[in-house]
Image (cartoon, rainbow, N blue to C red; front, side, top):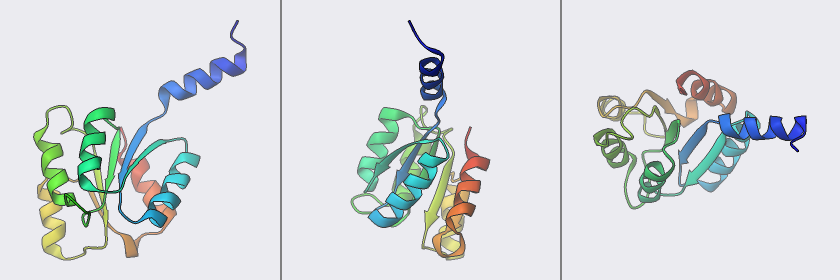
Length: 136
């Protein structure tokens, strides 16, 4: 027999939205992941672009937070591969990076990023609000 509490837990797990966070800075990854988990999101992390792309294909997240400066495969390459894949091309991507040149911003948006955030210009609360605005 399923108690009302178990029903709630089962339903909540079924509706949790998945976010893939591709970030090579462990402290930021841990801090933002914890904050998003507290907001009710299921967070998967990747420390480099190759793992990020592999995880995106495996879990098909509802949103991807993507740094651009990454080992093995940079964020631009990841974004390009995501948008070429019919199964992944519609997943919203928020670029969260330290790169702030207009050329980098234009390139990321042209490749299909939905939002471009420069880490130094946004606090944790603002990043979470951008996630909420962009997630399906």
